[in-house]
Length: 228
Image (tube, rainbow, N blue to C red):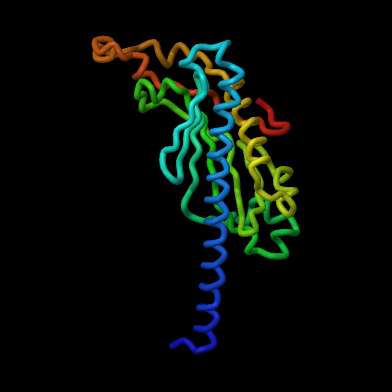
């Protein structure tokens, strides 16, 4: 049987971690709501500039899919934003553990996550269930509303300001602008001939070969000095 002292420490740990995780969750949800506000504003800004230059079908749209999901469509691209409802801590190999802000207080490592995925708009329009989307960024937010952004091939350089950077609508807009720019420049490549040289009779008869062929952009993310 555990002594009262041991049990007391366990209960104290439960209280501390519960409070930290609750603070992280609330901060991440607040940031996600700011992100949705920023997306609505971007739709208005982009539409005002583009409405005389592109078709109405290509103009940006925003749809809130629930408290933890949102989508932004612009021409052929869709960005899906997803907030995870749980709180995470990094594995010991992650660069975040190399900075003093986390070394001095490990509880600062507990973070909520907002994921940004890039899909093709047509993948959803035509219900192409096998099409691929790519995670182009993850926003990590901790109990003090400090944040950093992680991309596909980025390293510890990205977390160097974790101690000082506090999430706000302004820096959320910067993240969105960079993500949208990347998605637009992230072109769809022609699939290798050998991947599409054979088609089934069913595909042809149903006239949905374009929906049966898995489509997706190449993997990659360029947030700072990343290589294509």
